[in-house]
Image (cartoon, rainbow, N blue to C red; front, side, top):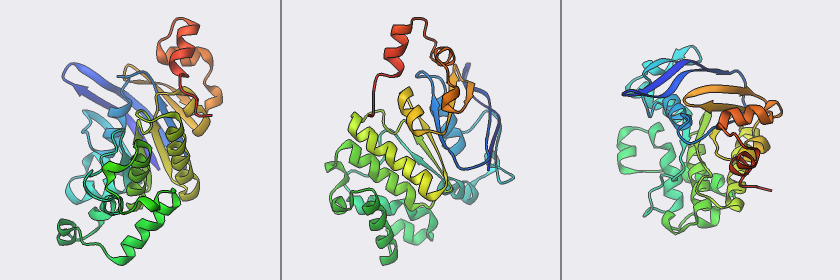
Length: 259
Protein backbone atom coordinates (compact mmCIF):
# COMPACT_ATOMS: atom_id res chain seq x y z
CA UNK A 1 0.00 0.00 0.00
CA UNK A 2 2.72 2.48 1.04
CA UNK A 3 6.49 2.03 1.22
CA UNK A 4 8.92 4.57 2.63
CA UNK A 5 12.49 3.96 1.46
CA UNK A 6 15.50 5.78 2.94
CA UNK A 7 13.44 8.98 3.25
CA UNK A 8 15.62 11.86 4.38
CA UNK A 9 15.09 15.58 4.99
CA UNK A 10 17.89 18.04 5.59
CA UNK A 11 17.46 21.69 6.57
CA UNK A 12 20.96 22.91 5.75
CA UNK A 13 23.28 21.06 8.12
CA UNK A 14 20.36 19.88 10.28
CA UNK A 15 19.10 16.37 9.54
CA UNK A 16 15.40 16.35 10.45
CA UNK A 17 14.69 12.82 9.16
CA UNK A 18 17.45 10.32 8.43
CA UNK A 19 16.90 7.36 6.08
CA UNK A 20 13.43 6.42 7.35
CA UNK A 21 12.22 3.01 6.20
CA UNK A 22 8.83 1.40 6.82
CA UNK A 23 5.93 -0.05 4.89
CA UNK A 24 2.16 -0.22 5.35
CA UNK A 25 0.68 -3.28 3.68
CA UNK A 26 -2.81 -3.18 5.20
CA UNK A 27 -5.06 -0.55 6.83
CA UNK A 28 -3.74 0.28 10.30
CA UNK A 29 -4.00 2.88 13.03
CA UNK A 30 -0.39 3.96 13.52
CA UNK A 31 1.02 6.23 16.20
CA UNK A 32 4.37 7.97 15.74
CA UNK A 33 5.98 8.90 19.04
CA UNK A 34 9.16 10.67 20.12
CA UNK A 35 10.41 13.83 21.71
CA UNK A 36 9.85 17.25 20.15
CA UNK A 37 12.28 17.64 17.27
CA UNK A 38 12.51 13.90 16.63
CA UNK A 39 11.32 14.38 13.02
CA UNK A 40 7.70 13.24 13.38
CA UNK A 41 6.07 16.23 11.68
CA UNK A 42 8.68 16.40 8.92
CA UNK A 43 8.05 12.73 8.15
CA UNK A 44 4.29 13.20 7.75
CA UNK A 45 4.68 16.38 5.73
CA UNK A 46 7.04 14.63 3.31
CA UNK A 47 4.55 11.80 2.82
CA UNK A 48 1.78 14.31 2.06
CA UNK A 49 4.17 16.34 -0.15
CA UNK A 50 3.75 19.52 1.89
CA UNK A 51 7.51 19.24 2.35
CA UNK A 52 9.94 18.03 -0.30
CA UNK A 53 12.27 15.26 0.79
CA UNK A 54 16.03 15.64 0.30
CA UNK A 55 16.36 12.01 -0.81
CA UNK A 56 14.61 8.66 -0.66
CA UNK A 57 11.34 7.35 -2.06
CA UNK A 58 7.63 7.35 -1.19
CA UNK A 59 6.05 4.51 -3.14
CA UNK A 60 2.27 4.09 -3.34
CA UNK A 61 0.70 1.54 -5.70
CA UNK A 62 3.94 1.41 -7.68
CA UNK A 63 4.17 5.20 -8.08
CA UNK A 64 6.98 7.29 -6.59
CA UNK A 65 5.02 10.09 -4.94
CA UNK A 66 8.14 12.28 -4.86
CA UNK A 67 7.99 12.57 -8.66
CA UNK A 68 4.41 13.87 -8.80
CA UNK A 69 3.76 17.43 -9.93
CA UNK A 70 0.75 19.59 -10.68
CA UNK A 71 -2.48 17.61 -11.03
CA UNK A 72 -0.84 14.36 -9.94
CA UNK A 73 0.47 15.95 -6.74
CA UNK A 74 -2.94 17.50 -5.97
CA UNK A 75 -4.62 14.13 -6.51
CA UNK A 76 -2.22 12.52 -4.04
CA UNK A 77 -2.88 15.24 -1.45
CA UNK A 78 -6.61 14.55 -1.84
CA UNK A 79 -6.08 10.82 -1.32
CA UNK A 80 -3.64 11.40 1.57
CA UNK A 81 -5.59 13.89 3.69
CA UNK A 82 -3.81 15.94 6.34
CA UNK A 83 -5.10 17.07 9.75
CA UNK A 84 -3.14 19.69 11.69
CA UNK A 85 -2.67 20.65 15.33
CA UNK A 86 -3.99 24.17 14.66
CA UNK A 87 -7.03 22.94 12.70
CA UNK A 88 -6.41 25.16 9.59
CA UNK A 89 -10.07 26.13 9.28
CA UNK A 90 -11.26 29.43 7.80
CA UNK A 91 -12.44 31.18 11.01
CA UNK A 92 -15.03 33.52 9.44
CA UNK A 93 -16.71 30.83 7.35
CA UNK A 94 -19.38 28.59 8.82
CA UNK A 95 -18.71 24.98 9.73
CA UNK A 96 -20.59 23.53 6.74
CA UNK A 97 -18.58 25.59 4.25
CA UNK A 98 -15.31 24.62 5.94
CA UNK A 99 -16.21 20.95 5.51
CA UNK A 100 -17.29 21.47 1.90
CA UNK A 101 -13.92 23.08 1.14
CA UNK A 102 -12.39 19.63 1.63
CA UNK A 103 -13.83 18.54 -1.70
CA UNK A 104 -12.75 21.51 -3.77
CA UNK A 105 -9.70 19.88 -5.36
CA UNK A 106 -12.03 17.27 -6.85
CA UNK A 107 -14.00 19.92 -8.77
CA UNK A 108 -13.47 21.89 -12.00
CA UNK A 109 -11.40 25.06 -11.55
CA UNK A 110 -14.30 27.50 -12.01
CA UNK A 111 -16.38 25.74 -9.33
CA UNK A 112 -13.42 25.73 -6.97
CA UNK A 113 -12.78 29.45 -7.48
CA UNK A 114 -16.41 30.35 -6.86
CA UNK A 115 -16.93 27.79 -4.08
CA UNK A 116 -20.07 26.46 -5.78
CA UNK A 117 -21.48 23.41 -4.03
CA UNK A 118 -24.24 21.06 -5.12
CA UNK A 119 -27.06 19.89 -2.85
CA UNK A 120 -25.57 16.40 -2.99
CA UNK A 121 -22.26 17.76 -1.66
CA UNK A 122 -24.07 19.69 1.09
CA UNK A 123 -25.98 16.58 2.12
CA UNK A 124 -22.74 14.57 2.24
CA UNK A 125 -21.09 17.22 4.43
CA UNK A 126 -24.07 17.30 6.80
CA UNK A 127 -24.04 13.51 7.12
CA UNK A 128 -20.34 13.59 8.01
CA UNK A 129 -20.94 16.32 10.61
CA UNK A 130 -23.82 14.31 12.07
CA UNK A 131 -21.65 11.22 12.25
CA UNK A 132 -19.22 13.02 14.56
CA UNK A 133 -21.87 14.73 16.67
CA UNK A 134 -21.46 18.32 15.52
CA UNK A 135 -24.16 18.78 12.87
CA UNK A 136 -25.90 21.35 15.09
CA UNK A 137 -22.89 23.66 14.56
CA UNK A 138 -23.20 23.59 10.74
CA UNK A 139 -24.20 27.25 10.39
CA UNK A 140 -21.93 28.61 13.13
CA UNK A 141 -18.73 30.41 12.25
CA UNK A 142 -15.79 28.10 12.85
CA UNK A 143 -14.13 30.61 15.19
CA UNK A 144 -17.03 30.30 17.68
CA UNK A 145 -16.37 26.60 18.32
CA UNK A 146 -14.22 25.06 21.03
CA UNK A 147 -10.85 23.60 20.10
CA UNK A 148 -12.18 20.06 20.27
CA UNK A 149 -15.13 20.93 18.04
CA UNK A 150 -12.84 22.66 15.54
CA UNK A 151 -10.61 19.61 15.34
CA UNK A 152 -13.63 17.40 14.67
CA UNK A 153 -14.65 19.82 11.90
CA UNK A 154 -11.14 19.44 10.46
CA UNK A 155 -11.59 15.66 10.55
CA UNK A 156 -14.93 16.01 8.75
CA UNK A 157 -13.25 18.20 6.12
CA UNK A 158 -10.62 15.50 5.58
CA UNK A 159 -13.34 12.86 5.16
CA UNK A 160 -15.04 15.08 2.57
CA UNK A 161 -12.00 14.35 0.37
CA UNK A 162 -12.85 10.62 0.40
CA UNK A 163 -9.19 9.88 1.25
CA UNK A 164 -7.35 6.58 1.07
CA UNK A 165 -5.20 7.58 4.05
CA UNK A 166 -5.29 10.21 6.79
CA UNK A 167 -2.21 11.80 8.37
CA UNK A 168 -2.77 13.67 11.64
CA UNK A 169 0.03 15.93 12.84
CA UNK A 170 -0.30 16.32 16.65
CA UNK A 171 -4.14 16.36 16.42
CA UNK A 172 -4.69 16.50 20.20
CA UNK A 173 -1.66 18.48 21.39
CA UNK A 174 -3.69 21.63 22.15
CA UNK A 175 -6.80 19.91 23.53
CA UNK A 176 -7.98 19.09 27.04
CA UNK A 177 -8.26 15.38 27.96
CA UNK A 178 -12.00 15.07 27.20
CA UNK A 179 -11.74 16.66 23.76
CA UNK A 180 -8.56 14.71 23.05
CA UNK A 181 -10.49 11.51 23.80
CA UNK A 182 -13.31 12.52 21.41
CA UNK A 183 -10.84 13.32 18.62
CA UNK A 184 -8.91 10.07 19.02
CA UNK A 185 -12.17 8.10 19.07
CA UNK A 186 -13.20 9.88 15.87
CA UNK A 187 -9.93 8.95 14.16
CA UNK A 188 -10.19 5.36 15.36
CA UNK A 189 -13.77 5.24 14.07
CA UNK A 190 -12.60 6.35 10.63
CA UNK A 191 -9.95 3.63 10.56
CA UNK A 192 -12.47 0.99 11.63
CA UNK A 193 -15.41 2.03 9.46
CA UNK A 194 -13.63 3.21 6.31
CA UNK A 195 -10.92 0.55 6.50
CA UNK A 196 -8.20 3.11 5.78
CA UNK A 197 -4.85 3.83 7.39
CA UNK A 198 -4.66 6.65 9.92
CA UNK A 199 -1.20 7.83 11.00
CA UNK A 200 -0.98 10.15 14.03
CA UNK A 201 1.94 11.99 15.55
CA UNK A 202 1.38 11.78 19.29
CA UNK A 203 3.17 13.19 22.33
CA UNK A 204 1.40 11.01 24.87
CA UNK A 205 2.48 7.41 25.14
CA UNK A 206 -0.68 6.07 26.76
CA UNK A 207 -2.73 7.55 23.91
CA UNK A 208 -0.66 5.71 21.32
CA UNK A 209 -0.94 2.46 23.22
CA UNK A 210 -4.70 2.80 23.70
CA UNK A 211 -5.75 3.71 20.16
CA UNK A 212 -3.05 2.42 17.80
CA UNK A 213 -2.36 -1.01 16.32
CA UNK A 214 1.25 -0.12 15.60
CA UNK A 215 3.74 2.33 17.05
CA UNK A 216 6.71 3.90 15.28
CA UNK A 217 9.25 5.50 17.59
CA UNK A 218 11.58 8.24 16.35
CA UNK A 219 14.72 9.63 17.94
CA UNK A 220 16.93 12.34 16.44
CA UNK A 221 15.40 11.85 12.99
CA UNK A 222 15.75 8.06 12.94
CA UNK A 223 13.15 5.34 13.32
CA UNK A 224 14.30 3.32 16.33
CA UNK A 225 11.16 1.27 16.98
CA UNK A 226 8.41 -0.14 14.75
CA UNK A 227 6.13 -2.80 16.20
CA UNK A 228 2.91 -3.54 18.10
CA UNK A 229 2.25 -1.52 21.29
CA UNK A 230 2.74 -4.62 23.46
CA UNK A 231 6.32 -4.87 22.18
CA UNK A 232 7.13 -1.38 23.43
CA UNK A 233 8.93 -2.24 26.65
CA UNK A 234 10.03 0.19 29.32
CA UNK A 235 13.63 0.06 28.16
CA UNK A 236 12.71 0.64 24.52
CA UNK A 237 10.48 3.57 25.48
CA UNK A 238 13.26 5.10 27.55
CA UNK A 239 15.56 4.77 24.55
CA UNK A 240 13.08 6.62 22.32
CA UNK A 241 12.62 9.49 24.78
CA UNK A 242 16.19 9.56 25.99
CA UNK A 243 15.13 9.36 29.65
CA UNK A 244 17.58 8.35 32.34
CA UNK A 245 15.50 8.40 35.51
CA UNK A 246 12.37 6.27 35.94
CA UNK A 247 10.37 8.96 37.79
CA UNK A 248 11.14 11.68 35.25
CA UNK A 249 10.45 9.29 32.40
CA UNK A 250 7.10 8.08 33.70
CA UNK A 251 5.79 11.57 34.39
CA UNK A 252 6.91 13.01 31.05
CA UNK A 253 5.63 10.43 28.56
CA UNK A 254 2.38 9.41 30.26
CA UNK A 255 1.40 12.80 31.63
CA UNK A 256 -2.08 12.87 30.11
CA UNK A 257 -4.58 10.10 30.68
CA UNK A 258 -7.55 9.83 28.31
CA UNK A 259 -9.43 7.41 30.54
